[in-house]
Amino acid sequence: MTESISEEFRINGNKAFAEKRFDEAIILYTKAIENDPSNFIYFSNRAAAHHELREYDEAIRDAKKSISINDNVKAHVRIATSLWAQRKLEEADAEYKVALGLDPSNQGVKNSLKVLEELLDVRRSAHRTSSSSASSVPNVMMNGAPLPPLCGGEFATAAVSDAGAAIALIIFVVNLLFTVSSFMKPVLMIFLWRTLLCVLILQQGLNLYLRGMIPRKMDDLKVLVHHFPLLLLSICLIALLIKVPPQLFLATFALFYDLIDLLNHKNKLLVWAGPLQNILLPYFKSIETNRYNILMMAASFEVMVTFPIMLTSGSVFTLVYIQYIKTRYVYDRYVQAAFSDLRKKVTKLTSMSFLPPFVNVYVQKFFDMLYTMSQQTI
Image (cartoon, rainbow, N blue to C red; front, side, top):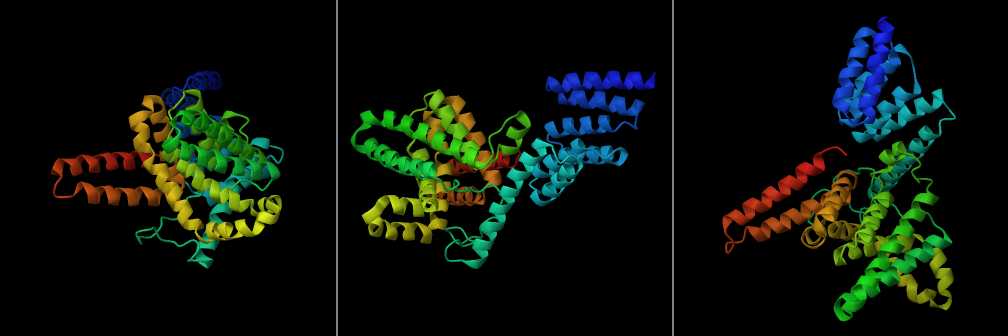
């Protein structure tokens, strides 16, 4: 009889969970546990509900209790995803490996582990680069303040391929034409803007494909949501669908990132260039030497474009871009540095004697609001 009552609570909890009534689901799973505290599934289900409410410590605690009753894959995955959300990537990696050991054929765990280990590789690689070559990737911002620690979601270049090299080159050309048209041929701006969005979507889609990161289900999407290619693809697709007006700053940060992609495909591009190799080599060398500054400039324009978007792009895309930059802030130290630098510069301007004090007060409130939003876990 007790088991029947517990199962009824679980079924109702699952229904509430499916309808995104997570608080109610937790109450129902708790009642199931009270009736049958020996059932590991109830603790695992409650962990999932806590995770959806971003109560990650509670989710981990329930998942560990589930494991103590019966070691199971789902509970280890719950722990891993909660640790990942808390940006404890190494610990999350260990949990995914335990889950894979329990079920070596679990494709979802394999996909998550692959993405996570790629992020860890990016973090370790960037750390080695910053440690070994302070001149090429210094660990300070442009104003001399320390650069925040690596977050695991920094921009990573696309995998080397003929298609990738061709698309990077097309983006460079279209972007330059778009920038020039904004000053000389405004009538072409919209066409070139939409062309640029289409090519960026194609580039990031190819990037996801070559990295084996195409999301196949909702769980994959949750794992990949903070990864740069999916984020950029998403905002470009939404901008294209809802016909967002041309955004010069957005095109500019895409151009800076594209320079790094061109450098990544340097060997292929030089082969294609043939006799023009000697002309291009100094430019590639310059990009390589200034790689850090280019990443900082790209991040700065990513942050700055928030303001023109608020003024010109409507409420829907404004909300989309705020979510984008919030996620980028959480997972990219260059964006964190750019935000900090921008705030200092704006504060210096609004503190000028010719401006009334309330201007600076409201500017600081605005930046505090943005910072508070960025600290909310993704």
